[in-house]
Image (tube, rainbow, N blue to C red; front, side, top):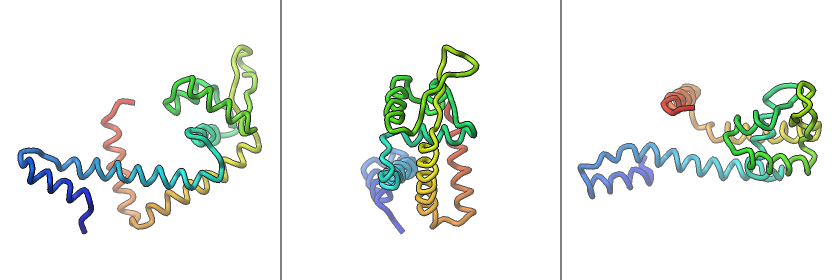
Length: 162
């Protein structure tokens, strides 16, 4: 079975036979998959009303384990965003009652970000929907194919610096 990228690469092979366009098949497909994933993720999480990046903040707090607290610095470094972007996300999440800022008991000059019980409930619901969506996308792959895809993507990612 052929897809659009097979067509595009065959055009390049005809137009510029000296060009090795084989990587376009891989990266073009990865980009198209990411577009579909982004759209499906947005649709799945829309009922929860999270703005861009807020799901990731809440999920990071939840996966950190009880008591679901991290410093703002730990959060923005974990999520690879600027401190300003993190502040905006935290302000909105706090306004919604999903997180609270608390004094760090070990350093009175610092604060920690903590999930509220409402925030924990909402992120757990959203995580269920999120993982169900991801599993539905992968449903057409066998367990062996999923493991192979995971391994190949991991190998590719390990070629990049942290």
